[in-house]
Image (tube, rainbow, N blue to C red; front, side, top):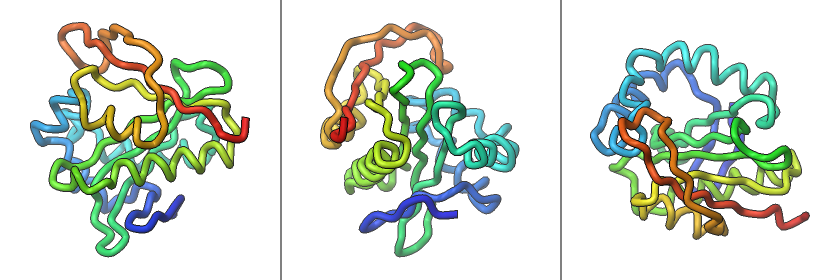
Length: 180
């Protein structure tokens, strides 16, 4: 099922046919560098798509359960990334988001386009006050995406989670709902 369309993208539910393209995308050094927990995606991609993502669609409330969508090119239906929204470490009227784009499709504005569409959808549908994102301090491309969408830097947070061996400094960014 399709969630959103932009000029060039479709954000849609994950499908069984996405398993191998997701594994191929996340097994690259590029994704593993930024998101080491995705390096083992081949072990859990199928049940993740079949069960966990479907539960998020059924609950349809990012405050209660993460909602995750495939980012696909509209003209070819090619899977090029992932975007999600949920609340596991944020305030009551705030949800967090994360995203990645296959390295082959970076620098075309796809992540910015997807993030902007998702923020508009979340604000208009769920009426949260803020959306936050945590980005590794040395991930200049992802920081630029967030800032283009209107996210503002809040603070640095040292985190030891996410599959990294050493604590990682992440930057917390937040964008406000323009209607609040």
